[in-house]
Length: 356
Image 1 (spheres, rainbow, N blue to C red):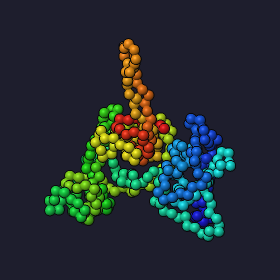
Image 2: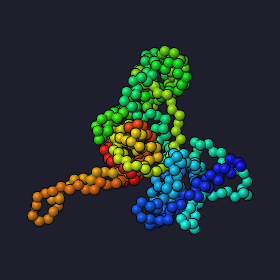
Image 3: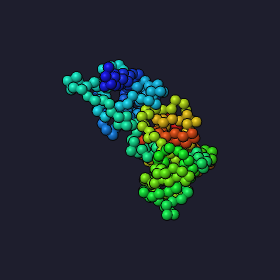
Image 4: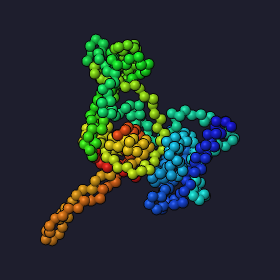
């Protein structure tokens, strides 16, 4: 069997289960999977689409995508990839309705399906998070102490840009040709414990090794900020291909927003903002998790605006207000990063996150 035929069969099998279990369709009870009122009968996947945006065309709750795909946990982490040009068809005659990949007509002649993995549609907008996929973001406590360090610059320059030469101690005999340069940033403080759970790393640029030894000689390839003596090096990571399916956590999650990436501790954000959370891998979070954002209800006095004689005032706390969704895309031991997918009000440090 050809590769293209195999891929079509796999795709057809995956989509044939996409809406099984959708007996509720529109008007489903709370907790059920709900189709959009204007869900299309046929959709051609386009360049720039994401799993989130495609799921949103068919479902009112995009994070319930795995439920209608009947994916197990391993398939959630390694889903069948979807590529631009694929056609998704909704069959409303089935009970429950089903989705399938439309098979091309044999009259069209041979078609090449061997599309590079990098061109498969991502889970969420890659342009919003691409800089964060290969950069550490968070340095665990004392994580930079033993990292290679720039000890001198050519001609004793204070700051270096692209093309500049520096000398690095601690590379040893490493065969790694490319390194990223970082500087410790602000500490990440857990809003609950008030303890530092890590340090946000400030990405400065990349260098390549031109001569090994002690010290080694490196040349600046790119610079997001000026690089100087004392800055630390971390080996360049392999770029991530974010193919995780949006899904809700299987266990209860209670997290808090530490802050917005590379912003003041009190800064607020909105849709497409990158936020840090005070929970990580050891708390059960994983890439692809979707969480809802809540703002704590205000405490108000019952005497405010009350007509007639004033009575002894009492206080009541209003219910917490849900106002947005985030998609977790990078997970460390005790900290995670998420992209704000929707928000009806400014996202603020200290706000609470939980299962959607």
